[in-house]
Image 1 (cartoon, rainbow, N blue to C red):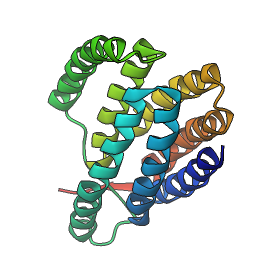
Image 2 (image 1 turned 120 degrees about the vertical axis):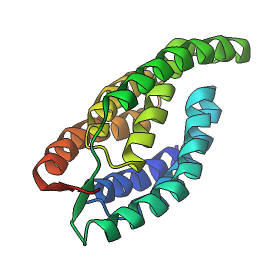
Image 3 (image 1 turned 135 degrees about the vertical axis):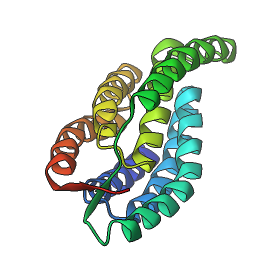
Image 4 (image 1 turned 90 degrees about the vertical axis):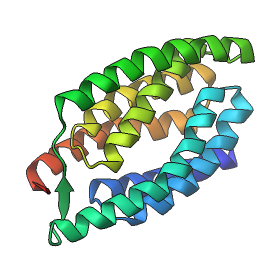
Length: 187
């Protein structure tokens, strides 16, 4: 339970920095990711565990990408990129194919909730990529993913993680509205 609480605290700090588009969020994402790897591994949620490994790795790319956009935006507090139709189409294809592939793999591994774990993991990979690219619509993906994560964690009885994902869901709504109101497009 101590690792769940640590992941909760790091996750809350991460999200507060994400909403403000503060680059410190990438370090907090890595810290929260490592703690979550341990929690999800202990619960047999292997896709969610792997997703958090991905979060740790993408934190480096996100930090570099955001620093470049910060320079290009001339210090605009929230720097955004426009989401294009090809990105959306590739994301939908990746979501469908990735979920199907993960379900098959997770069933072989004995994942306790292979369908939901696979779907939410692939959706979160896409949302994280959209976050690193500064698409404001990433928040909409997070709202959906966080709702599913909260349900999955509650069904597993990991209540601190459930609380974290409920907080993430509410914060994602606020984050979308904040980025929409305060953001400026770069490039």
